[in-house]
Image 1: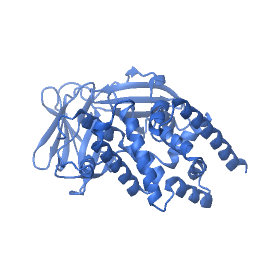
Image 2: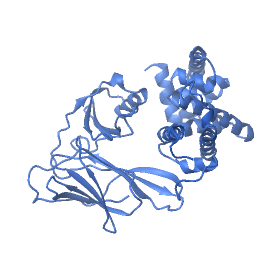
Image 3: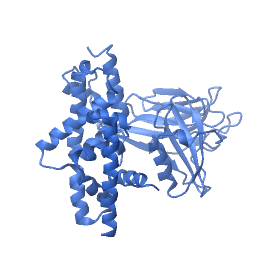
Length: 162
Length: 236
């Protein structure tokens, strides 16, 4: 039953409060708005089905982000697109659009750095939640974001000076 | 501006946050194999509009109606989520914030006044008590540069959110919130069949939300004696 299910209520509240952030990250990872919508809906549906498996070892939201990232990865493997980042990067290379330049730079990052950047800036997660979402230590998140910032600073500077 | 702030701004520009688009919890439940709890599926849209229409004040109403003191409780910007600080930065468009004050709060929705060093005044609002305080924000377009706050001529403001559903694609009013000036005690939303939804004013704010899907046509402000003091048509 759905009624009198606190975990279900938590999931619904999380969905209502943070839906737009989940969609934005999904959009960055899989490209089209329709695919992003499906990723978010399927991620929450998976969480609803397996909510009793959540042990509370970290924030519920971080657990959701982990599910969503895995869903998005699976979708990206199934679809011929490279996600919004890849699409925008290609567009930026063609048009020199400013907003696309940063996505082109993000597209050049290794996957873990790219995910950490999205979870930090598009999901507004703190390091602990990012660590839980990616299944790594907090120190690894710090190092990953530090490396991502250094790489992006270099790539974006090259855009300007090169 | 630090590199991280620059990066945040560029990423925001590249993929802005689209609020309340496509939320459909019933669809989640359906995909999860649960029975749907509501017969209709909410699919798309929440568009923020401002109520438009022809206002008419009731000059016969006693007492001061509409005067609004926009001095409020100062808010420490250091306590804000970085996303809200980002909003402040964006709304300033190069100008520095000199004051942030909470000017209304009914326990459900809070309103804030933002003052910048170039004289610009902006108004922001959001769910009371939320980590992210600013759900929406706008800067004054009035000739005198004042933010959109109640006046004796228009003693309530109105921020209207409309929704459409898959089953009923007609945009319907879902939420109306706003500031209320001196003398306004209650705000009522009327539909075209004569039905009403009402909200009391607390802390200079009224909140009408999760509204039944009806065709609302008029917003009416009442004083403490139950006398109408102002009305305007709703045009979502």
